[in-house]
Length: 257
Image (tube, rainbow, N blue to C red):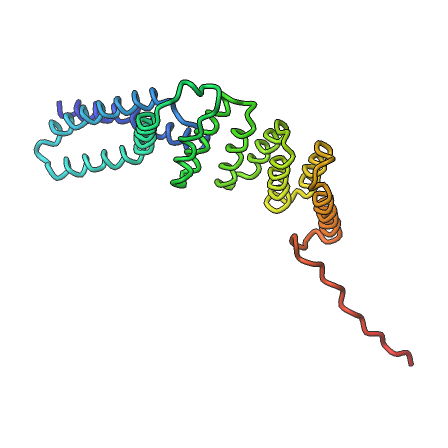
């Protein structure tokens, strides 16, 4: 009997730890979220696990109360580390659904209310996950694609954000809004990723799509500056962007005898 209780305790702990590590890997490495139903089932199973484990510990460590206390504390700490984020995610989703219920008369338009709530508190990772879900429902909505891109830039995921900016631009027709997005994308390409050629391409595509734009001349001047910058980098690839090239030191001629 003294051997059976520890064995059962260890056997039950293995899936508890394995699923917790897997859930954290999915959330923080691949930036994916489980469905609320999966989270609810998981948290219910964890609760049952704690009840069973505490019963086993009470019977196993009846004569060692100090060890019992420390073991229980260890379980609670592991539970908070492995499943705390899942509990917060599910609770926040339930609160949002309770206080801001879905409006069935607007099912044909994206609902950014949960996204805006997460952005206001600085939870850009959570906001991004919400945007990705909306993007699956409205893949042709440029505002949704832009929201994904903007939240990616808040997380310093500039390389990935460019794909979403490009997709959003392909769906836009308004010259003013397209210019704003084109300038933002060109800035990311030029300053964040040091891809001046792509920055110039974005602005040239804007001119091709909106040749009669009132800001066309301004865009042409910016393209010219980018071309000059690219040439400067080609001459001196070690010079950082925006730093003028140093002039060569004057040589002093030796007077002939």
